[in-house]
Length: 392
Image 1: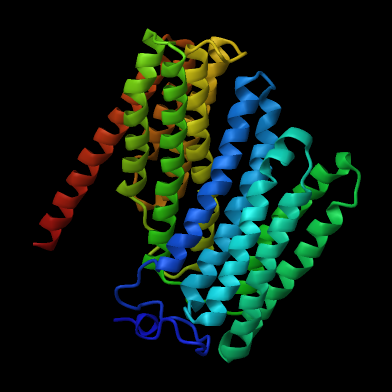
Image 2: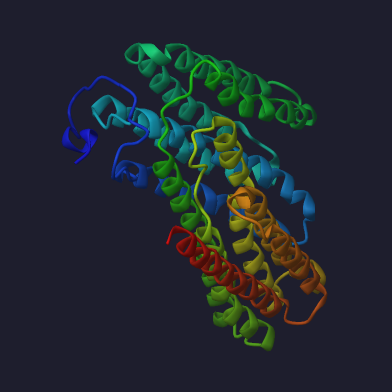
């Protein structure tokens, strides 16, 4: 039993760093509850994107989706990496996580306003609440972990300064806010790089790998829900057609293949090289966003099959083909260091894009992903046999 498990629920414990080689380190029930709150925020973002694309509002809807999803993803990132290094699971820690969960719900409630009216006030307020909770955690770590005091203070300082900037952005004219956003996002991404230079935090590789894997499942699960609701709506309206049957048969294959491909090579860098781990973590923005947008694409394709989408057949097909292609490319770039064969991902991504010009596009996408999955499994089995032979 780990130290935290043996003392879970205590009123207070020193916030000392967790051991990076701790055995049996796994996601805690609190982390799982925290992730479930993100289901709401991701669903709001995906639903808003679905509404915008299906009603012909144009690809400009991708801009607010990217902005909204960054806030959701980055807030999750901050908590995940901190918890991997400093999860005490005592009462003060849990209450600060509760504060972050409250902020997340406020952020999620502001997503529709951000899409429909470019009103980011509620999102920024919710984000600020979440970041205040995280700053409090880092300040507590600075008091308890003298060896990494400078690192913790850098995190607290960087997050605080940028949060003031985000709030100040709301006072600017709407046409300037997008420019400020483009400046603040790189600054946010730079905080961990700057902070870790003062001393690496003791994040746990296996714990981080599991946390990212669980979030991938959650995002793909959102896509399952989006596709199911869209198909149910079409069937209730009596819109049964060959195109709808194609989506019904293809959606499970597409989403299952996405899951399989991710977990074929999911691990963060085993070596504790911070810049590689940071790059791996940052690359998941595209993995998560593409997985969420895939569910939106499936829903839009269903709407088009039911004649309730105000867009062309090509545009509807692209709403699915593009996020699937981006997901496959993101996996190739993110896991390229795990082995060769990345060119296959790029080829399949191009094939997925090409299906937008074919009838029954989802069927061809499902076939392409199934082919890539089969090739990856055979290739992985071949490497395993070679390694066993070399070890013998």
